[in-house]
Amino acid sequence: MYNAIDTDDKLLLGLQKGDQSAFKVLYDRYWKEVYKMIYRRLNDEEAAKDIVQNIFVNLWISRKAISIENTLAPYLNTAAKNRTISFYKKNLADFSRNSTFQDDQQQHSIEHKLEAKELNAFFKEEIENMPETMRKAFVLSREENKSIREIAAELSLSEQTIKNNISQALERLKKRTKRYYSDPTSLATLFAITLTKL
Image (cartoon, rainbow, N blue to C red; front, side, top):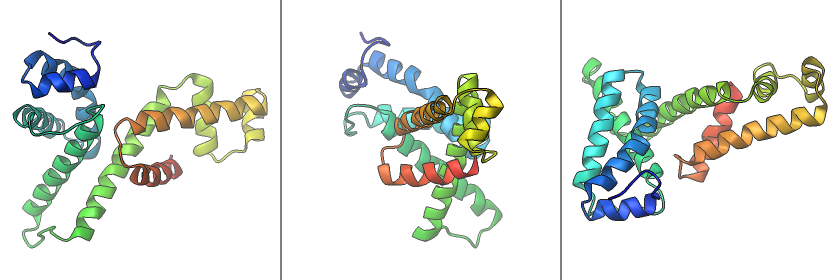
C-alpha cells in the first residue's frame, strides 16, 4: 500500500508492478498541475479534463513499457504538450481542411506558441502568489522597467533589499518551472522570452 509521502521513484516501481494504490497517489499528486498546464494552453475546461484523463489512462495502460527515472513530472509535461498540440491541430483542421500541419517547422511554431502562452500564464500566477514586497519589486522591475534605485525609493527599502527580492523571485520561478520542463535549452529560451513580456 502506497501513500502521499512516498517518493516518485517508489511509486513508479509500484506502478510498473500494477499496484493501483501507487497509481492513485501519483494521480492525486499530479493531476491538478497537468490540468492547469493544459488549460493555460487551450483555455477550454472540458477539453483539458478529457486530455488529463487520457494521459493518466495511457499511463496506466502503458505502465510496463514506460521508462521514467526520478520523477513523473517531465513525462507528464511532455504528454500534456503533445496531446495539446494534437488537439489544437485537429481543431484548426476543422476550420481549414486544406491545412495538413505535417510540416516540422509549422509544428515547432505551434508548440513554441503554446508553451510560451502557458509559461506566461504560469509566471503571472506564481508572481501573484509571491510575498508582497517581492512581488512589488519584481513587477516594478519587469513590467515598469524601473531601476533598483527607483524601486528602492518607491518602496522605502534599501537597494540591496530590492536586489535580493528580485533575485529570489527569479529563483522561485526557475525552480518551479524546471520541475516540469526537462529540456534546459528549451526552458532557458522560453523563460527569457516570457519574462520580457511580463
